Image (tube, rainbow, N blue to C red; front, top):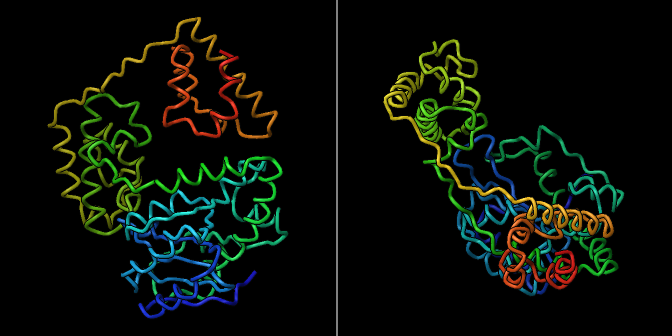
Length: 370
């Protein structure tokens, strides 16, 4: 479905006019597009805002100063409707220091409405009877390139065009289930999320396969990972474009391998950074083996294990009764703490990990279970 009413905002006066047009509105819907598949570090390329029957596609590549937009995003009288807002909120914070207030996340609302499909296209089809085309080509497009094609612009506009209608239907379902306050609290917590820079020094530990390596191979992997980070920044290219993870593991296990024969290392890449890669391999081999940190995780006693199973059974039964994902009802880590020390119940239920709606609706039931 094409969205005909949109405008590209690429100049400061256009942004000011768009913001003025949002004055007095009760809600706007918002989405962002980045280019993490094509550039490193990624760029925030577009902000799409549907307001007053028009989609404003803010070109954040050509328009760098977005501070005026904060007046709208932080205005508590204007609800911001976003689908799967976690990434968008981190992205807005990271690139422009923009923060959202009065959030309604349609993905969260769908989860608490007893629905089983939470993707935007599925929700629009199932609840509105409208099919939007989710082209894989456009999903993987380089949103940092200019000019954007008409198909790309229509794709970007379609993501926000139906969010208000979705909000209306989801709000009705939540009201009928008595869960409006539950979603409001979840959204309020999400508003406080901020971007956190990656831990580059320990990034090697999260690479798939690292858990199977010995100390010597880990030292090589750490050296290679730091090299790849530096090279990715130098080329402004994503990590997988420089060296894919599986190739890093291959080299960590066999650092003297013939680089030309290592799958994932193309000739063009070796021509550009082959010498530096060999140096990183040497540095890793010369480094002392890495000793894995050991966390003294005390195993549950039979009594504690039985208690935890009883709590998990309680949570599963509640989820089935409410047609709700059990993991939403109470945090797993909290259940384990209660299984170990049931006497800490009063402190546990007022900890930061427990929502008010969880405490109000389920604390008595959990206490009985304990």
